[in-house]
Length: 310
Image (cartoon, rainbow, N blue to C red; front, side, top):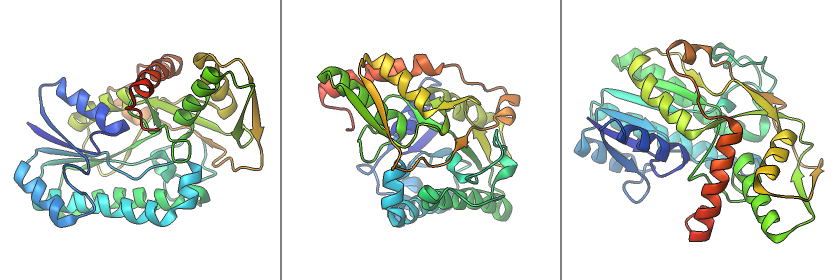
């Protein structure tokens, strides 16, 4: 069995590659050095030559509030091209299974909590990342369309906020958790007295370790076959302020945490209802404390070796 993981060297993709390699499958991790997914012809040629039985789309242009807000054209256009090129190429190559990974940001800003799959398109999106969300919603619709028009057994999975090894720790382009890890590790190492963070710290967020996501992809890739996208998350959330305190503690930071309320908070709360995925036999196993601690250890080691994305 040959499996192609698009975005296979990134945060989610690398975890998915590791999980499938443990099953004995032949896994091809795709990044820009292998094939440019923005090039439809090159993508089609690549899939026709490798003849995979499964393609997993873990490739995307991603970033935090600041990056999404500053570069909406890139977040919309690039992600639309990547996913449509991959799906059209997979169809042309007659790929049996395709798993599209989206994001929990597809749901309305003021969605009822916990968020059920059926809440999609029931209200306005969060403005700061609406371009990225629209791209992912389009991906869900394209999967459904390939199922409807061509009978493809392709599925969509919507992960919550992910973290773990091989994350993006750039301060300007990363998500909140890796940004906190880098900032508090560096603040601890430099004995900084005060670390100032964006917003008020009041929004609540849910986080899932990428190894738990990878286990969900492997399991649900075998067990699930439906046009309805599936939520993948822990089903538990905490405030950004609580998250900052936890990361600071695990990083050894002894200083004060301050908040810049002039910066945006984003969506007030976002926690997924993951009962459908759990009913199919999957559940997360890594606690947030253990997952953050292991990620901090990985980051410190990777940064010292000069291989962390930062």
